[in-house]
Image (cartoon, rainbow, N blue to C red):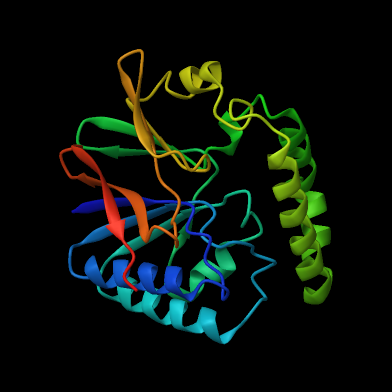
Length: 240
């Protein structure tokens, strides 16, 4: 059994190379008895499970081939695709995980999350997240026309870019106390979101940060764990 962890792909029709890189990854692990965990921001924006498009059809087709081969796909929502639900995952037999999830591999407990909840110093973002992720607000948004949701998503992305330009490096990174709390009852913490791939030592426990998929440098940092719980953070090259 191979356990593969990825995050922050930000797939969209505007970046076909990233899509090809993801599909190549599925093909590479097709026959390796793989559990694939996607820890948020799989898509650059997700406006609802009722969204359809030709570029998405090819992804679904290959995801279905992947699971039909006996592999499994698990997904946690991120700050860009929090509206993605089980309805979409059902098209290829994927499974939606809660925002915080613990998986046992070997004799180790791995805590999985997107990572944005650890950035507690970013007060304005946490305030916005609390509102937009409220089940009532989310249900209301999903009931609006697709065209309205698309405009709203574009507005959110623009505002996010502008906001990040005015925030310090430290504010947008994880809070040390939040990380220590997250690791309290587990052995390893895995997350994405910050786009700063690295393995950190936190009081003797590893915090493994996954990398975002970068079109300019043609690479991504992924995590592979074997059935004994041993891991390697490695570079996945996105072919041209």
